[in-house]
Image (tube, rainbow over all chains, first blue to last red; front, side, top):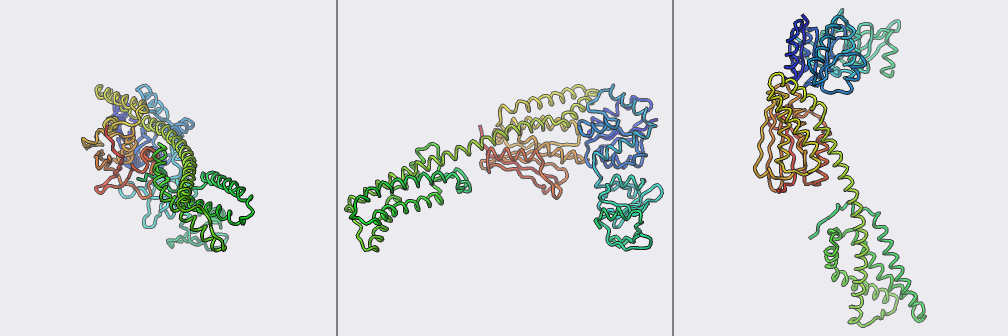
Length: 246
Length: 362
């Protein structure tokens, strides 16, 4: 069975998808959501195979949800939209699936056929997430799991990022969150103008850097405003200096 | 009664007064030349005497008229029709002409006696009426010049203002079309119809008809730019019914329209963008059930419409969108300072937008 999630803030729009999906023997509905935040939480916990994702929604837009997903692990996305000239052009360019409202049954079935074809082709998931990130710009906010729920944190509140196996530890002033992502991917989402790598598996918020003290062999000791000490590897010194204007 | 026609700031701007001053100076130079040519052939009279005569009256008149231009509010009486304007100005003539005679003769007598001479003129009985007539004639000439200058300026300003109003009209029509036919609204509504018709053909049909009515109204709204509030509310109801169908169960509408407000004439489609805003920021951004209340009242010649949505309050540093900006501009052009739009958080939660326009029935 293909597990399908339906996300749209308008009930009639969800009803239409629900009705037509119900006619497909190989599809089952894995949840229906009317706003971005609850949809994003559900995606993380129930990881559906496919999401029909409305773009214009309260809280988080469909594109903002997609931008928060990890490209390799993302469900297959089919954006559903009334009208978004910009996004549509980007979707076309990157072969991202979408449905234009209103759509008829034939168009809907065509979209389903594409879903079946692409279900096992990961490159389509990646391009959907990538296009969503391009469309939304660098994320000012980041969705992180906290307890059983999702929390939205400002990316400016993040002090440092630390890679740990398949996860990234996100340190803020008083919390550490664990997000199943690669550091590289997360930096790409957050935008490199705010964060800078200090060694292979760590990055800091540039605004939080307090002092740098030279160590042996070109390494530095980096002190954050919070007082936390980190090591700046010599491989990353030139980038940091050029970004901070030292 | 003084009725200012333009703000004082504009009146003070000098540029259009330059030609007026030049004309006036030319006239007086001419008078001076004619008078001096008459005296120049009488060698018995010292040169300074005619000069004093001319300069005393010239200076008095120039000083007086300069003050008149700088400080006079009475000049701002409505220019059209001309007769009341002239009559209004002429009411001041007796006082001004008398003052002129007193000052000019005072000056002449003073200067002559200081120079050791005697200022000789006709007996007062003849001289005073003569001078009064002369002053009156000059004043009438002056008023003619001022009237010409002022009306030229006013017509220029009106042309400019007319241009602005026309531009704003065209823009508001465009904005209205865009607001009404906003693709999101249109396509989402069509999608709702498409969904409803699978289960409830009557309801789908009704929704489609509402949409058609609204489109028709927005396309034809340019014909009657000012409409009774009743008509404006009819269109608003079409719009809100469509939105309620789309956000099934999430929006409650509450209309509290005072009887005497229904006939008040308002600019067409002035409330539409405000209600749309209430949906966009109050309802669409919320996940719960929200309500929108539209209340209209007449109070001391003002129509006040309040649109209150129970959604999330205004955030710090929020900025006004294009829709409200357009409404504000339209009201300003139509009513000047007589109309207003205020947006504020409501004490009981949500946001309330208050529109107030001068209320004329009929």
